[in-house]
Image (tube, rainbow, N blue to C red; front, side, top):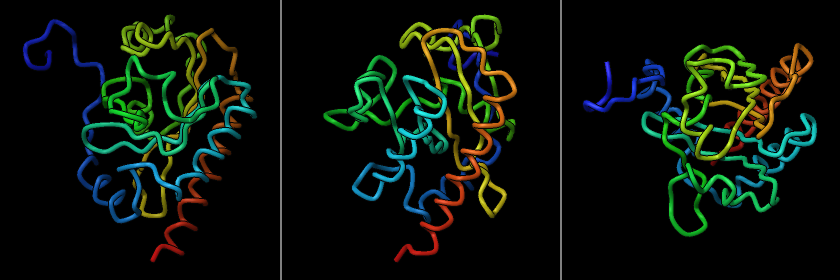
Length: 193
């Protein structure tokens, strides 16, 4: 089955929790726009990039229609998403959104398990994703952000433009980082006005 009669097969999984997740993200004040309160997410994305030695890393919240990079680390260090401009949507300095069918985070969200792709081109299901051609992504390491309600709100991930042997150590690191950012989100909820 193809969406809207296009020739491209639908590769992004259906979102079973999309409306519940969107409502939860709104209650938490996440997933809509970046503001000063998101600096901690950018700092966390910087840390993910440092720990994984990756040029790109994100703290990504996903609603029913799109992905929002609340935390973003790019090679330029601007955290404005300019390096993702080929696939990101938005205007002006707000390049922190990407279509839901771009990238691998929606797969992690639906699986509710970490995903390691050392070379995305080794997996036909993932090699045809727009981020491969549009941005040049070749490897991905991501884990879901499952909060206290049991919902997967988004992901934390690291990506590179070259194949990477992430292996078991990479998997363990990204899962640990996911637990850390979920704890940060839960603290944010406690102190939210």
